[in-house]
Length: 387
Image: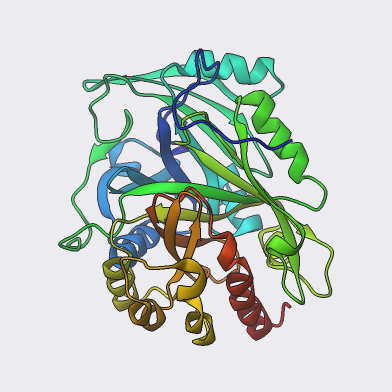
């Protein structure tokens, strides 16, 4: 993949170990790739507010005449921020068209695989639409094999085979120094899951797509009262690879009294797309304090939520008073508990936002917090006049 592409760019339980002879093995998330209007400024925001470290760059100075791309990392989490560098009116580029139609958003959920050619062939044979056939990129650091398939909306999955490659990101990129001094301790360590919003009636279609095309398994589902408030509702199913390294919840709106958060997203994004990215942290208290001090805005939860929290969430490593102070949510299931909090949208359009999550055994998604979370989102929708 050249520096001008987008990557510059019956439910049942899933076993905790890899399945035998997995036809679509994955190694994990490779990168979340954003199409943005100004990659330099976006890179500064994620460096400053999220504590990420700039590690690589490709742009006009490195021979990329069409785009500028900044690669930021925290632990194994990697964001790639790409924008065009020529006016779309005189030159044209699908990334510029994407930003014009959707605003800043995720264009690629790139997945690292051990064999990109094999993964691509399996996906296409099982009905995936090809975006880019497999090809190689080489430099002094080794060889990377890339291919891409389409998923919901304008989102794609680039399949990345980088075994033996030791460059800063991909051939065509050069190492880059951090834009700001990173925090003394990492704010988060990995990508936990990436959530997609799709149109009414299309959730099952895309769940079946992942079942068929990537051999993913249905992990969880949330319907009806599980995921509704007095005013709005949605439905959600979670698909994952056999090792749970890659998890994709898929949401669709449900009929309710007022406009749901999914309806609002679809309206302002202009169709299906990635709604939020969940980031794993091993210390959510430190992470929230650091990010809030840097200007990140989180959704607020009423104090009344915490009055009975201990009765159903039980003891957690963080005292309830601290959870209350920082507006962090807690949930417990049969495997353990988790702590989580959600940012407000990180751009002017009420579309993409982030989740910070700390897991202690639980592999859930905070089912017990859905009502509190959605009510918090509804309060923000009402401020925007979109409820």
